[in-house]
Length: 293
Image 1: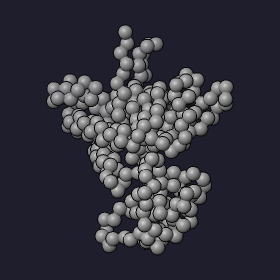
Image 2: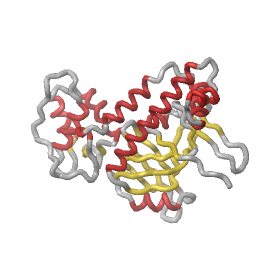
Image 3: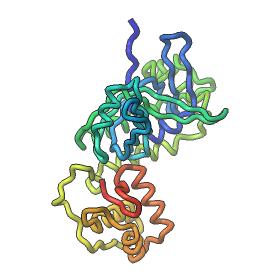
Image 4: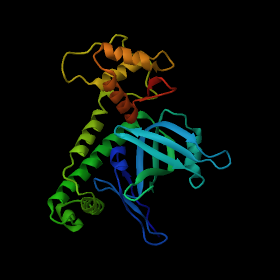
């Protein structure tokens, strides 16, 4: 009997940066995707905001493509005739909503040296905001564990899983970290430390938002900016978008105007808006309008 691989918790930023695939030898042998932090992925478990789903096939042979965002980026999913359960679920889901997904990784290499990753979902279902928040917290913990294993592996002259296990890491963590260091040759892990910090910040009350958020939590029309230099401009723009939304989404021209009044120029606003879209805080119901999720 072949055991089922554990589904890894991993953020989109790490998953999408993965470029090392180990193909299984033999008909039943599993393949693995080695992430930059050493996750040895066959199956993956993610929770986020479904921001887009579309049938790019037809009624008889549907092929669903979807996007799911977490605090660090976007996962891309494809489900066809060989994923009937996931396809039927995607056909019924209406974005934006929180969803949980279990699936396997897929890779696409258009040319040598380039590898794009996505998820082939096995199961997908709608969940509540609390489930998403718990997943973010657990994934922060898992990411921190991988960072620790990577840091120890980087200290070794020749990364070795047995030596990492002697330090106290589990076999999957030790094997993944050793393989990752040999392939990615990281100089430091600053980017991933920052990824975990940003994801944790997402759980703070001022960032809490979602499709089922109460309409009573309104934001005043006039937004005052404190004088401190450390004002969180993403939170400010998010509040602007909500205050300018009369039901059909905030008109982008109005957001631009309001932001300029508050000292945020267009180029900086574009960067902030793209970050909010990537993190799943907002979406565009139609061109030229933006809504808080």
